[in-house]
Figure 1 (tube, rainbow, N blue to C red):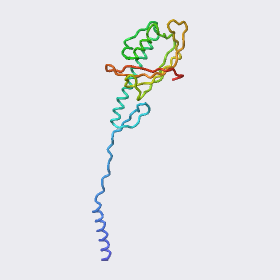
Figure 2 (cartoon, rainbow, N blue to C red):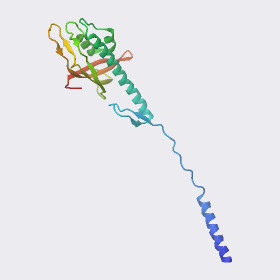
Figure 3 (tube, one colour):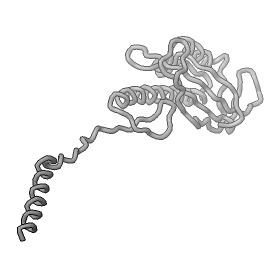
Figure 4 (cartoon, helix red, strand yellow):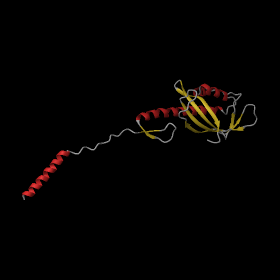
Amino acid sequence: MFRRVAVLAVALSMSALAAACTGPAPPTPTSTPSPTFACIPEAGGDPVPCGPIEYEQAQKRDKLYADAEAVYRRYWAELGRISFLEKPSFTSELEATTTGAFQERARVIVDPSRHRRQLSGDVRLVRVSRLPDLSRSGSTVALLLCADASRATFLAPGESDAVAGKVYETRAYFIPVDGSLRIVDSELREVATC
């Protein structure tokens, strides 16, 4: 019996010693959630995870593109209104949305001696997309736009026959002037479809 008690005492001592050496189990670390954000890539597309600094930069960039699109749509609406006039003129809305070389071209477009008056149909702005890392004439932001005038007819000064419109892709460049963006320059090319 002494032997059993001795074995039991040794076993208890060993387990007590093992418990004393290991101490209490360390607490399970809890992860502190870090804020996650979703940023739209500059070229557009689906949002991707990003950190707070990238998110703030993306918000500023997205606002710049949205402001540029709003300016172009204002210009587009005014040009659409003027296109049906027999004797158009350069308006305050065109003045407010354009500057530099682009403004000079806009003055030519509405010059009554050169103005191609729209007779029928509609000209649709089909697509607007971002053009990252592209600059011209000191621009800070650029857009790629596609307009379809193929369902409209136009009459040039001194002509008697109306002609159908075409489909054009435009790169529009914007620059801040007096606290708001304006179209400063553009590149235009005819395309088959938007």
